[in-house]
Image 1 (tube, helix red, strand yellow):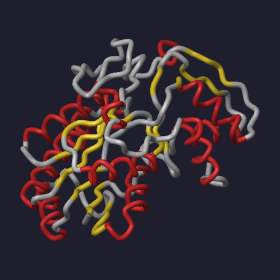
Image 2 (cartoon, rainbow, N blue to C red):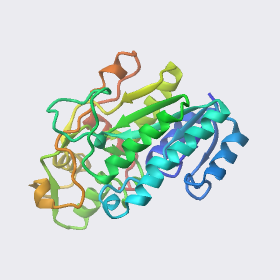
Image 3 (cartoon, one colour):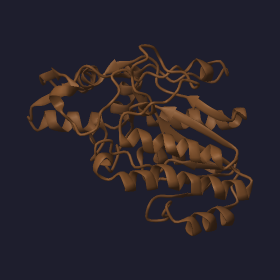
Length: 286
């Protein structure tokens, strides 16, 4: 595999770079490549001539998208199309990452790849549009939908991962109020990067659901992180309505990963196990 990684400065991009090793031909973040600039994208892909383009670049501020819809759509929808067109021209495969937030959370069961998306907010709309535009180009593609990504170093746009922010607030003695009525499957960036590369090597195409094993609420994730880190701090369980964030989120967005598991690839670990490993390897930084 000769791989190109876009969005290499983010938590997923960093893990892709680390895991690809000698297979990595080029990697860059926003400073190296503006993914919304079609000419720049085409130039880089044409020069590197990769077998695979991993698109880890994204606008991931769920609430921010409500007031910056044009920017969210530009990064999450139009930029993936530009990457898909460049990949098609180069004869490369595009691996694009999407989200559980393309669903409305009303199914009451884990969502399959062929379930009809119904996003509740601008962020979900922008990610779904990106999926559709990638497919419409006719390029070879793998779209990986995932959920609640947590990684070492966290998201720069959000000031660190959810877990990092919880631990920091607890250490500062600030009150913790966390939503307890939204269920999802936490997915750790390193595990997701490994799974994405495995999908490429398996030669698959199309849409795939890949998340950590098990599911929980954000409140359960917060309390588990504090317990593993050895921090005693009360965490108030609140509802999404009480939190009153700008963007609506699905109440249940667990993804069905049975199709991925049927390939015989290594399953992603249970979220508590992955959380413990993430905190152990991030000691001193969170």
